[in-house]
Image (cartoon, rainbow, N blue to C red; front, top):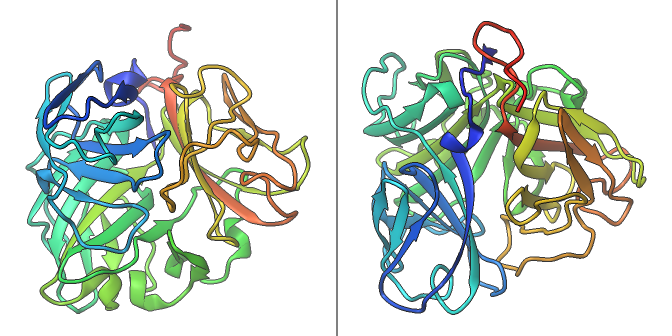
Length: 357
């Protein structure tokens, strides 16, 4: 597991809120860098999520709450030095509504080698443990080199050309307070945005855990159909900056504490026992505790403030506060996972605590 060399979290990930102008052009600034992955959602309008990245090109989006292939009906026109420009008046990204954008920086598009399936294009940010990869399926077991320098703990795969299929998720927390040891065949696990539970079929990841150099693909058409095109978003734990947490729900308002080693800016949670229990929280829509503004990546629903989230962002982790009716702590014993990204990274590359901010 790598240590953070990042002094300012918002140089690599940032949440930007904006207001649509219902026109064919809207330049969004204030991100703080040129984003390579932009995920948009209307907060007060029930329309689908849209995700754009530099690998597939600004005009093309995929929809996290849908199995559909990529489209260019509602494009971005560019990724800019301090944000991005929207090229559509569609209500999902630029109507007369309020929006959130989650923005990631990748950047490196050369230099990785290895694996049996070569990405057709990619963009990686090893310092932040994040990479984007596009590849063509072979129909045979294979591996893809990721260039992150440390083992990915969360991998999202989506077919973008060749048909419709679920978003497929590989998840494997590295130690900590995790229920991972309770799942048989953890190296086979696959989860989906729109389907209950998880699969342990080896056809997803070829029965092989990701390593510090490659991740594996099996033969199922969901991730590796011959001639079809896929996009991957991979995340690796970076001590002091990014962590995939695991915990057991206790259905109590005094829920578990999740140690991250930093104060979070972003938290995406999923429940492997219930497909309706996904949510995203961030420090832009929730600048103070208790975190109570919910957007769900598997639905087009408007932002909710019903207490379904129920957590606090603390200096070194996340305190779960939602009770038995909350998404984040639903049903005693449910296995929960969440990706946290730092507002203020706390560890430097020499394994010494960073300067207090």
